[in-house]
Image (cartoon, rainbow, N blue to C red; front, top):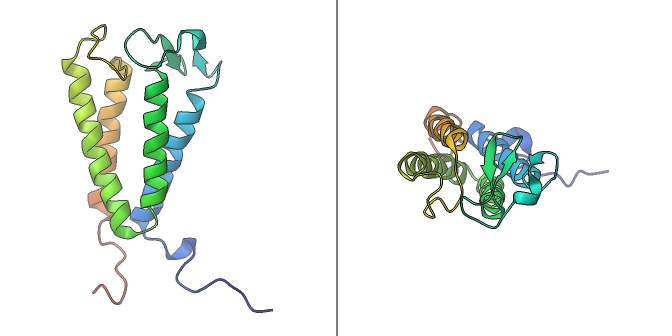
Length: 153
């Protein structure tokens, strides 16, 4: 019986940047879903749509809100979708990392109890955003052009 799988279209043909973007996107999806699960998110009854009055914490550490969880889900969808092409994966990792760098700075500048802290963010979130920014941007550059096709050379 003939296979319907076409060569060069499977998982093995993905570039490392595509694999990285897919993995990062999958983690964002997981984190977004976990943010809506009582127990995994402590003080779940305190989860509000947005703002510093949301006192729910993912894993008891990271302050989350409904909006914050939705942002994680959207980043996850973007990562999985953009991982379909090498250029998309690179852009997701680079620009996603830049967005997280901006969120890191935003979290440092905006006081935690301020209404401007609409996501909301606490110090643990800020530090995680820095790690995500460095990691995503680092992956974008480290994996760029590692696997060019014969046509791309």
